Image (cartoon, rainbow, N blue to C red; front, side, top):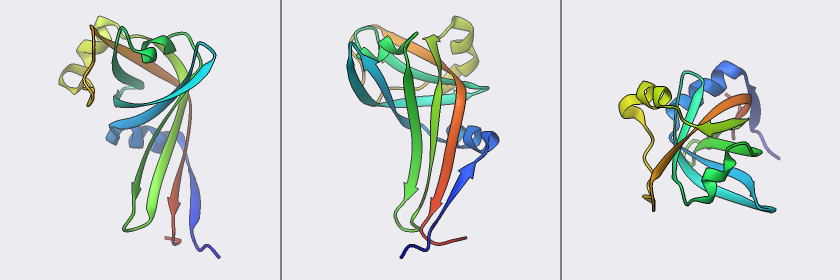
Length: 135
């Protein structure tokens, strides 16, 4: 029998958690096949920014359907959170890149080819927090 709890998060809580996170997974349709890739991201002022390369399939999310999920868990305390983002993606503008300044995301894996920044404007945020024990 579980004694845990699941709490739905409001929009402000989702935004706060996206602000502190740096790693997510993004799922998208790539020529009829679903792909799921890890990404580093930065979030500020309602824009989620990811970095990829021109040759990456991830660059294809512009004007396509996708879903991004950022999360965090703590095994010791058996807690965690998850935020799911749906929205629109476009090439980041020079103004957006300038606004992020030194907070631009870096790819842990590096990239082949010219770097491309994709700006995601969330249209739908859903989140939840889980705890193994009520608190």
